[in-house]
Length: 434
Image (tube, rainbow, N blue to C red; front, side, top):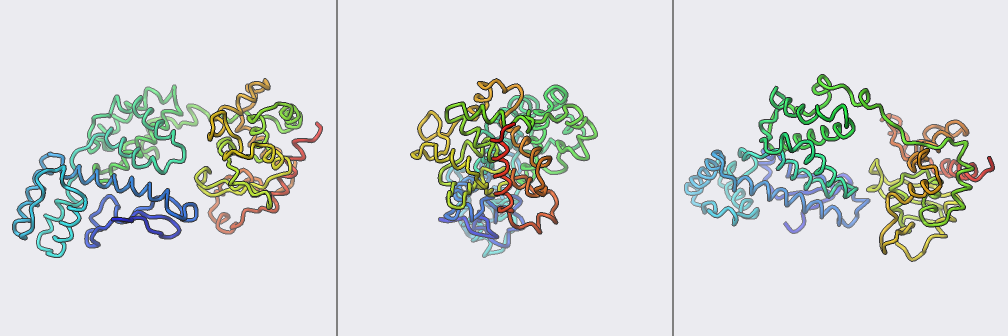
């Protein structure tokens, strides 16, 4: 197809040319599949097409697996297709697997569909045919490749690969996924991965468990395995392992008491350099580190005093409007006007590094007491204890999602007027005398 992205319900969707009669047989849900990209965020569909290209490539790889692998079932299916072709007086499947293209397979399906004489032949070249065996590692690599375009942080793919290679592959790399069920053997394999690190590297172990669960769910959705997921937590592994919070209680980011903020800000203003101004801007806007470091001038609108962070950079994947105080605007105006990024790094065309603001705290001698992200907690404590702004205004100021669905449904706006006042008061407090 020349163009396989369409707009549906405000999202770009990937659509494949597949006969409607066989949509129910498509275990991979490839008739229509959301790219996860909102039309409003990508009006020309540029990012959506990149994701669709990957989905299309994954489909082709999947079908090539179906016709290239030579396990017993695949051979039987291929022979059935040859016999059906002879009876229907159409061309036989191409003998050389490397020459079988998606276009050829689709064309055969459509011709067989019109004949409607041999369902077995259709199944032999479509997703309903049994899948050749595939190992956990093969599934994991394809899962990562398929989801990589949708991850906002390019480091995620590396983290996935590294943790699975270190902890999971030594145990289940070459195990066929259809053998990893929720029975004793499958659960035992997962426990062999998790048990050695659950008590010593609890956070890492929890992430490994979640990643194994996701890969096995992907394999089930693609028809490579069936049954319950042995890596699921609720109702399964939670009966075998203690909860993560009991083994390794959550450690909150080190935060500065709000009473110490005025003195700290006075010292910070005396520090020169882009990293110091980025830290000051981050504190004044109560933003996350990555949101501030990747801020671009194109996101700033000085007339309404607004900074709009795009959805792909937000944790909740929704655009976030940040009211700007006088001091925040002064910092913006003081930054180099010829840079795409608001806080340019040493390399041309690149923003400051992730560690730049923490290094500023280290030079100020407070790195053992506070981290950059902790200033969001400082802001939240100050707003709760020192102001009368409603809780929803405070939560929206730090871009926290609303947990209550009813409240979220009724609260359609983002309380900008109140948040402008809140951020102006926060600025006044930051630069007040102690």
